[in-house]
Length: 431
Ligand code: HOZ
Image (cartoon, rainbow, N blue to C red):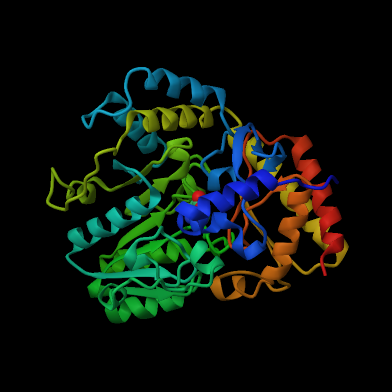
């Protein structure tokens, strides 16, 4: 293990802090909860990233999920380059938008029509407005620890950075917004039944990450998603699956095909942009057609459906469609998950390991993690020590206990083995 020299990153961070709040453009990146300072990245190739001091790491953040093909994949770069030469934005339709929409519809049968936006946050915000417009109801039900972007009405008991930084409900959200959001424990179907029996007729939508990925990775209990489908159908509530993280990740058709539950609306992002800023929301045509200009629910965007981003998304999905992609991802991820679990067990460190496809998590707790309350029992100091030990050995994990490990098809057996070896060493030193 060589001593990490990160002086250039530290200097760059000090400079960034002069101009950017907290020195970063998204809070979890600041490394606050794991100690130390963020690394500034110079380049990425395959499953590796290199910082501006020249240190190279096996990357399991993968830009927080989008880079399922790895960094700078040749097919993506080639299509993006070709598209760039023809212009970067027109604010008018291009054929690329329809091509990506068609690929999404083919992959996710519940999506009959889809609208492109610029981020996952925009997708959930728009899907909720649409659900409200469609049902003419106001109430939204979400689940503790699920994160749906930084939308006002959804930043209540939210996961991801909000949990990492201990901000359960952000200041700046008017009481009037918060009043229209009910939060319930994830994986507790009786709680949903109970609330819907009392307030179902006021409820516009239930929004859920079908596999929670922003309080660490928490899979749905068997029958939970089916239960949500039955309750929402009974009460005329729009069921929204937030598949920004899981879409094209846990299966080509997302969590909804993996668990065979069709929501009314789906939000997407990350992978469908191939590393560019993209989001999308889609679903039943009857609901989607309520959007302007076919309907009266307003939603718009100058850069929505941007040709360069569409090109990256198309190249990524085309590649993912290839034979055995998800089998390869599953095998690599299984090996990694089992190896990490063994490393903890052999060192006597109490941990709970979760995995759905190529999304994994090591929670530093001895109890099973099934929801936000149990996820929050994790020892974040131990995670921080683990994170730092792994980083020193060239493994780049998310700088927060409450995020996922993402495996890409660019990771190979060699990197998985190196990661397990590093984990074995680090776990031995965890107090
Ligand atoms: N919301 C992302 C994690 N779930 C963080 C995005 C970022 O910092 O880039």
